[in-house]
Image (cartoon, rainbow, N blue to C red; front, side):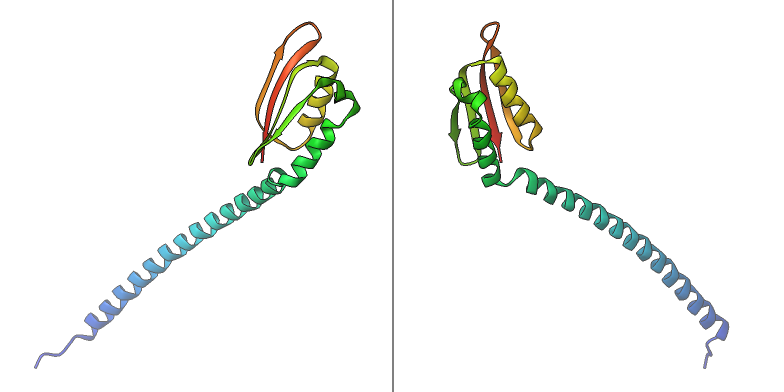
Amino acid sequence: MNQVNPLHIGALLLTVLLFLFFKLSTFKEELLEAKLQYQESKKVAVKLNALEDVYGDQKKIKSSIERILRQPSLKSANIIKKVTKDSIKISAKTMNADALNSLMGKVLNGSYNISLLEIKKLGDDTVSLEMEIKW
């Protein structure tokens, strides 16, 4: 009968142990990578949530645009406001430069997702305006 050499058993155990340590170190590296990706995803999610709070509140955007359009300096501009499912379109055939300056000052200082802004110069002091704000 053949006997198993104890050195062979020791070498086999040492090989298995080294293999397990190698696998453990690769799993640790993968875990560290996954943790870093999770942290990056978490930061992006927080930023996205903050942006949605600012740009996604339809009622807040509507009320603030209506408040801007009720300004006394914009009454003479004959601004036409059209509300659709996902946006507000503001247009004016003719408007003076002071009214445009007032409107742009209010709109550009607010948090709005402006998808279209077209201003055409009609004369020295008159312009036409077309703007679309989405939510």
